Length: 353
Image 1 (cartoon, rainbow, N blue to C red):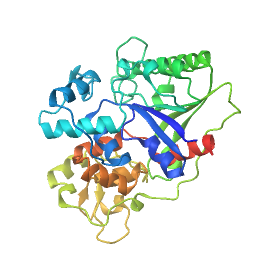
Image 2 (image 1 turned 90 degrees about the vertical axis):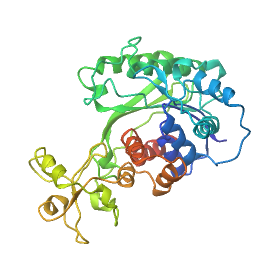
Image 3 (image 1 turned 180 degrees about the horizontal axis):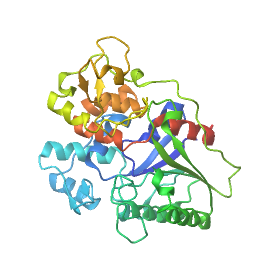
Image 4 (image 1 turned 60 degrees about the vertical axis):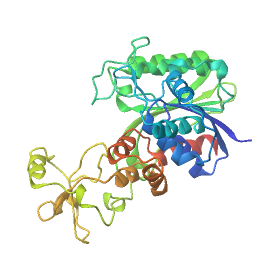
């Protein structure tokens, strides 16, 4: 019997990628996502691009607006595209993805049976890079959307839950709120197993720490251990493209500006895809970027290289670029907001295999 999965705040489906890569028999019975470009990429990566009957433009708009698809939480507005062609593409992706839209509007009584519920809720209000205005219940911050998950968890009672978020969730400021989340889950009937895991121990040359928590329904729980990972055996060179378009190379003006902010200290082999990073073109020589910087041209990581740093496959990247037609900006964004897939693979391996 296949594992029934519901992905809340699904993004492009990192969790589904991991389950697929492990060869687990699973079925996504629904997702909750409002980001237009995430929905298009999810559809391109995970679904067959089958034809479907298209209702009238009015009916499509009603469906998208009702579910808050293409909703911008920052300004509280729907940003549905205007061209009919783009509306149709978004509508098809929404339907094929089995998307329930804005999690605040979901009636749990209308959801299908599920075995695994994943929730990678927005980190905007708890990240060190954000405003840190918190995730308190009823605070109406984007991060407080995590509390909307409990109506689904309490009613549907999945066997397993997977939560992911930034390390700062368990820092001094927000640890009390994290403890409340754990307490609520315990009261509903789950045992929680959590740890801060780093992508660099899961076969990607990137220092990316995330809180990962598996919750198991108490009536079926036999204990669980999150994986520790293994020492990194890759470097940045393992993910670099051989031939890179000129548009990714930096001008002399940009180089001078970058030099003002160059980090001092020891050389590091870990690079974040969320940053525009200086790398040198080594003309075939396997020189370290920090050594090349005095003799080569500087460039930023390409979108494909950023996807590789997340453990995403080149095939999935090509689907997002060529089928979903995501721009470079949106491809960078999807990498920055994703979850390291090899890390998820090991988490699921310990849980399901």
